[in-house]
Length: 102
Image (cartoon, rainbow, N blue to C red; front, top):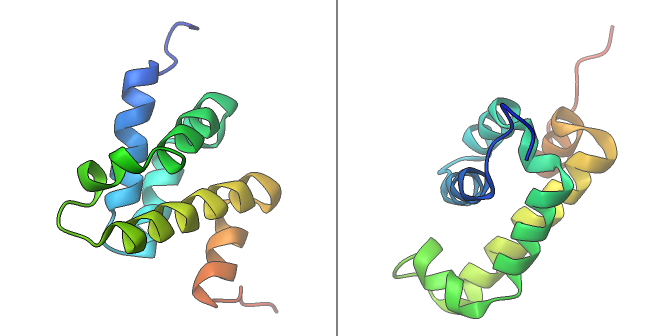
């Protein structure tokens, strides 16, 4: 791990924070504050979370597991789209917001 780069444990904690954000705006702010969530290690951690049904009750306590799994997959797809076109563009697609053009 490079000096100053977050540990896998910190990246995991930030992913959980991203998954638990109460609004898409809050999720976007988390990604902007933690660009490491768009790096390969974070992608591996997110894939592990998405493929491990035992994690859903920990992330979303009290939520129906199929709904929680769908929400995790939605966030996983959003992160992939952020890697493709950038955070602002992906969130604009997700929320239906379009940038103002002059």
